[in-house]
Amino acid sequence: MHAIKLVLLAALAASALPAAAQWQWVDAQGRKVFSDRAPPPDIPQKNILRQPSGSAQAAAVAAPASAPAAATGGAEAPAKTAAAKDDKAAAVTGTDKALEEQKRKAEAQEAAKAKAEQARVARERQDNCERARRSKSTLSSGQLLAHTNAQGERGFMDEATRAAEIKRADDVIAKDCNAR
Image (cartoon, rainbow, N blue to C red; front, top):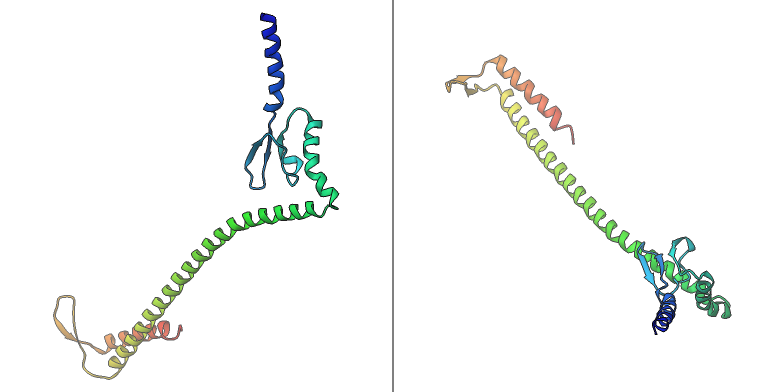
């Protein structure tokens, strides 16, 4: 009785082995795929990581999938392969399109910031230029000009101070008015 159980158990184990046969490959997106069926024909041999021990059986399983394509003159297989390549390219491009869109938006934001900064600097230079020209005009008029010193006392500008202020206004005009 015990011998019969062992024989039945061995027969059961032997019949379960083919069912445990697994295929393992890396698909077009780089993911590992586990299956009890052979991979599609567009998966290169180098991407097949594991196959059932019966290689002849594996080849026989893969052959019927490509046999109808050969019977129709092979037009269907290249079309499927081309479609798979297009799907792969679309998947890769889809990711790239999203990254490119983010990159383009970031570059546009940077360009807008740079343009705003340039506009701000240009406004400041124009402002400085106008103030320097008004100041030079006032200084060159020859009028008696009053100022307040560090102690808070009121005084009048002498000719040396007036000449120094005119020179400073000329420097600002040269720097900010001519740099447009």
